[in-house]
Length: 252
Image (cartoon, rainbow, N blue to C red; front, side, top):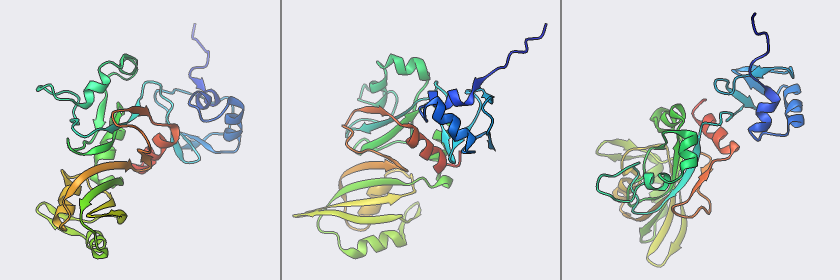
């Protein structure tokens, strides 16, 4: 005898479990044509989906519906290595995760998306979503990364123009998307750069080339995910809006 029972989970239940809205409000979203599954708008209430394979968007933003995928933001402190292990016993990102058994049980293998230099602080993403991680690191998607740097001296206006016009480095030209002086102190300046590049030591090399070597460097944002007031060495899960913004930035 063939089992004719429907398979999958009702779409409104999936949306409610993902934290998009209550089940009743999720039904309203579906009825209004604001929800799509695998690229097709869904309006019927009885639609069932497989959360393991379906791709769901609400108002054009992808919704994370799989409970085995993990998305974390780390404020990497200065001196920590952007590696999951170190054979010399130096402090690394993996040390923060080795005792988080609930995360490891949920996610399995976690990895960091790109890296920060040992002396650079700030936002580092950690996930087990291989496709998203690959796209975020691939230069063709040009995901914006925001840095705040402390440099010696007062930075004149023409430095920003030079950086926006492009600087020729030994491995090719680099152009910043935006540049501004955040603060000026006696003998020091704080500047903010937004770049698409991910080459090694790229911010330090850029500022060194224009005559303002970096004294301290912090990455404050990747796309629309921002560090905010997160303390150094602390992990936090990304919210649904942040994950959706990352998906959107890389065309997923």
